[in-house]
Image 1 (cartoon, rainbow, N blue to C red):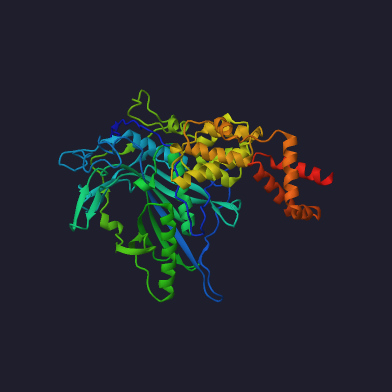
Image 2 (cartoon, rainbow, N blue to C red):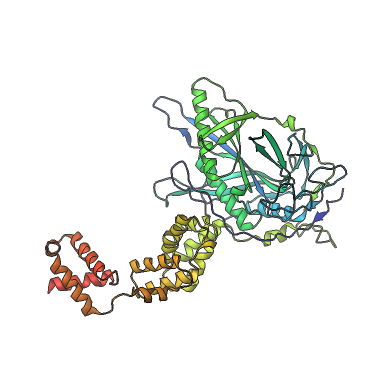
Length: 557
């Protein structure tokens, strides 16, 4: 049987690293993993054993939780998996539907080359074995938003198998205490997305939007190697960053481009695994962590009260913070898997097996895709740590906010300030203002050039740190002004007149004799109090170090 014809598709806009939803059951954002050597994305720390799901009282038997994930990532492609219909978020309902998407009789699937390349690239980045021959199957189920009554997927022989994903978790109160774990990847498969059901409760009716029907998905199946919500959320965040770095998916969870199903069970260590439940369609890392941790505790409570765990599908009610039953879990027999008769086997090649004279537009070379792999997030973090002496937690933060790494690098190029100073300003001041205003990096009124100029003024001791913050606030409010203009207009330059500073210090000491006495007695707080008073008198235009030297000189004279 001949290989299926591949339909070409241009990617369009490529997105950079995205903002990742924070939060965890410990009240802090879990760190994402970084590697030092070896296979791409592979952990450099051996996988840790399962942790207990609950602290047991003395004499009670402990519980262990087992968590596996099924992650559906929408492929970054201009058209759908088997049709030429365009893919756009928030398009008018049913405006992007072809005859094939609507399952009209006589229509046939034509495979999108871009989607296949995205699947291969993702598999390579996740250390998977790429199957040179994969098969398509029909998975039957009957929902109103699935016109054909079946989904085309890859159940028997998927495109990629046996991979791994490394991620890091915080194990102590300090960010620097992180361990790297690895979760095995069972398989990556290509499949169609379904349409969307829109429930109108006021009219008691359901409307169907088929714009999403047939959009290409990558289903990444993670083995049950995790044991709590925080681990699962951190693994998903790391996968999200990898997909965005590859450009294979925008992976925006808020737009439904990355959806997670969690399979959860609990058991006593050393005993067989328990009955699992599946929590469906989790669309944020924070909700994923909360749903898993709730479900673990719910199952423990049920078993300790003598009840049984049902093999069922549940959903997470984020308002109530709990999972609720949806339906009994379908078994494989219910889906009636069968080979897809309209699609022959998908055949891939490497440089050694590529047929002579093959049409390069109709074949996919795995080795060529491997050569195009970009730098992965773990490698970027390691490079930041080595190049700038950056703390691991700072490298995580720069990558976890979309566009922030590029902003940081542009500032570094244009300033003479130390990288440590730049990192502090970008993560503490700049990012803090963005969070307060709920803005993305590309919406910031302060450009990298403006921040670099401000840091140069600070580095040359033209202004003090306090004055620099005032300049930044003015930059944020007033577009078009440069830091130098603001410094000049508001007269924020540091005092260069030593005699004038000496007069101010003398006046402050005369006005506060008790503080001076405390300072002479060796009270360390007294000198800081005097420095603060002098800075106030000079409107923060005096360097604290110079103030201290001047005060000590006058005391000793």
